[in-house]
Length: 538
Image (cartoon, rainbow, N blue to C red; front, side, top):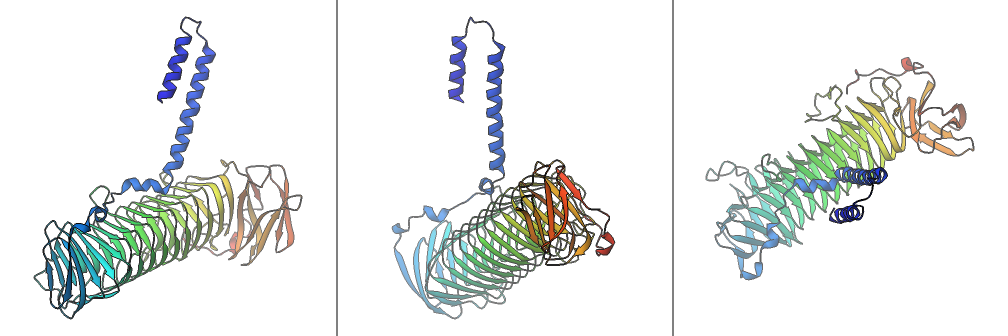
């Protein structure tokens, strides 16, 4: 901006006293307009990037600020309940059949090195931190921790974890923690909970890992079996808190409720995830951002749900079972590989909080809402849905990537559904399904497409090929289910050209592409031969 001002001022000084020249003024305005448009376009692109969500979280990283070298290491062989009241490093070994480790260090810094420890407490947490600034647990060897089925009344009412800390809690080291939570939760931090490394086998009667302010996984290997949520945060009020961030690691989760849950933001950069959950596999009351990672998800409700915005920049996402695959008010896919199998909608830009999958027949009864936007800008997407394949209560944009939808077989749903309209500006789309609620790829699009109705129901496994007049394949798809409608768009389509349609290798028909959307066949043909369905819900 300073450089531009200098140039403009210099030009002004040189033209003082000259006759006013309108063309130079117009030229200057044009240059400024082009610059402003470029800035706005770049801002729009960055706004769709999942990394923007970093600005919504407040990472503490207090463990990195501690100089442990200033403390002498104290060796402890567990023989009875250990109470630590001073800052320092404590190297702990041994077996304690009934007792606990208690940290009551005020504002101190405490590091516990668990070295092949076996610790059981029959009436409370195995490790209980009532006060400290930071508690760091470093794992060496194989460690076994158990809490009691009932906690003594001497503990505060909210103490409910086998490891329970009122201080910032950090785990590190190359050892293993085997944690059995017989009472309720496994690991509970009333502030921030962080995992730098280590292996964790956690079995609980309620939540597995619960941080009030945050759960931050830098790395580690997790096997979690939880009756309720596996990983969660609870802070709903403090700015920048209530987030889950995962940079790397391997997580195998089985949960009776949600797999990963946050009140604010979930941001995942990488890692390997296997999640089997009764409710949503990944759920945020606000934002979810996925930059990378490999995911195998089986969910009783949504695969990934965000009340406000879901952004996928990359990764390999396989949702093998779900009620709805992806759901948020705003859904943006910029890259990666996404595969979804859903008993209702594959993707849904619907907005708002969801409910349990139980008794959800006819859920998502939303009216058109232009705040709901679903955009696919890149990546490879495949959807197999019993409900709508891709559904937006507002707008649906295809700007890039390759999208394939094996949509519904009943006339109460459509492979594509948008309350405010569909626009295709790039990429390729092939969507097949029942014709009853079929929609085109939009007359406002810049990519040419075809909306094709078949005179008979095509069987599962039918191969559809569209070739140009030179015999080049432009569109090809082998369906997973029965269908009688095809919507296909690609930048390989050229206006005015004639194309041939082959069904299982036999030429079925030809058509000439005369419009942005060219309709082939009769929309009323064969609808009665496709099964009905629930009333269409947006």
